[in-house]
Length: 99
Image (tube, rainbow, N blue to C red):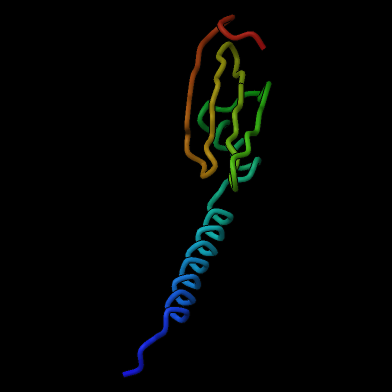
């Protein structure tokens, strides 16, 4: 049985690390939501309405989306994470929110 040298072992380990990193980046790119998907998620959570403000925060390879939505007399503040999950949700009625 042939023994592997230190350089070969280091090379194999480095290749494995690069492969794992490449797969992680590809998964992030495929699974993250785009701005249109984030808006649709926010509007579906609020039952529709008008987006009166929006903000996109970028951290690394993904974005976080924040929306303020007014639907009739109700207002909503909602944050959508980079993978489409609801991170924060607040709501109220009337003049509790000034936009």
